[in-house]
Image (cartoon, rainbow over all chains, first blue to last red; front, side, top):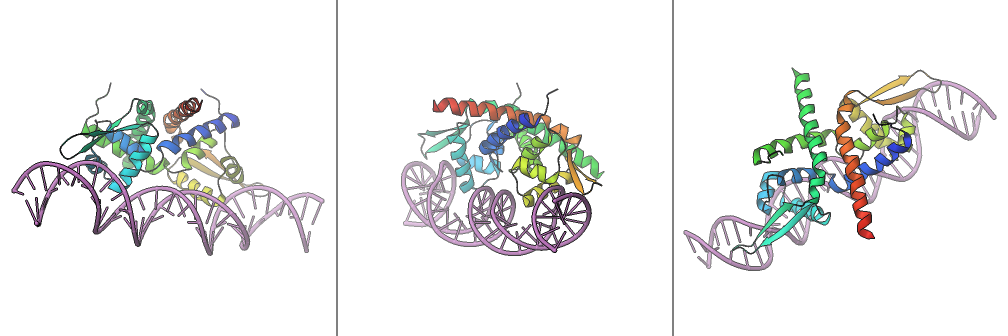
Length: 115
Length: 115
DNA sequence: TCATATACTATCCTTTTTGTAAGTACTATC
DNA sequence: GATAGTACTTACAAAAAGGATAGTATATGA
């Protein structure tokens, strides 16, 4: 078991803030989670995530800037763009997994509390 | 290795949203992280987390409502209140740990990128 | 009585985030 | 030529989040 001193918690606090700076907010982790089923086009992503084009555009730019998503323009008839997770985004797997698990757990707890 | 189908990602998406509903935002996880070094009073928490009383009050109420933090009034000379993590909050350990680890990793990556 | 400390709460305001609706540019199809 | 599909962008508006400042209530000590 790890100790939780005031100092170690100060460092932890900073690390958590750093993480939140990159993947905090309403959409970042949801988008990454959606992109895990494979590369997607802009409108496709918009529909699947339920996010408006304006926000999607902004979020994707930020994710790209932080090296979590790659953008590829395909030379198709109507030009298409593919958004895909990068290798670096795999480092977030633990975070994603932990949050998914907790989400399931918590929902279960709430549902049982209602019964 | 887990499969990432469109369906499994839809469920994951919901779970992540559920989690974000409870511990999303700028302060919730930071507060929990700070409280891991032990129970604290209101002003103490305000100072350590660097959060204004108004927001702190609101955040603590929400954390308490969701069963993650307990509030105890102590019958001292100037009345004091202790905020403490609940047992249920321990279920967030994996999330916290994963985010801490990623924060460290990412900061290291950024710093090296600057060199 | 004045200052200080605890734990908030209230008011006001700014910033950030999110959303809606419409528009641009390009190509292909009816 | 009108319509539709791709990928966005722009303008505007609403809502949510966050913060600064001051005030309330209680009690202790100088």
